[in-house]
Amino acid sequence: MSPNSNNKVFWYFRNIMVGIDQLVNTLFGGDPDETLSSRMGKSNCGVCNFICKLLNFLEPKHCQKSIEEDEGSKGVF
Ligand SMILES: [Ca+2]
Image 1: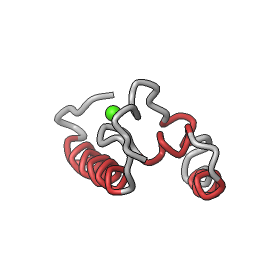
Image 2: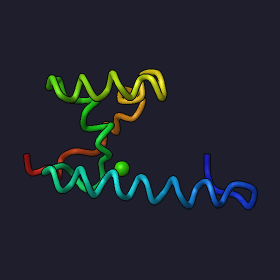
Image 3: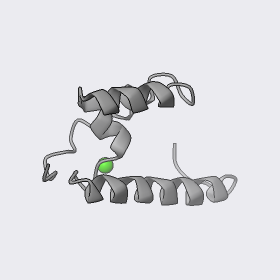
């Protein structure tokens, strides 16, 4: 899915949210190219599993579907 003239406003705000998401992941020591959902989907930590379960109410299997296999190598922690 990519932006077109009919939904540019949607994509504008979606892109801002992804940017904020990746900034927060970076602040927590993660790869700046990876979203928190992808990182939590790969992780098995208790807090991550809890947050992913909450996100499942918004979108089923959100964290699993968000996993970016090619990202994460630049994370510090
Ligand atoms: Ca990415």
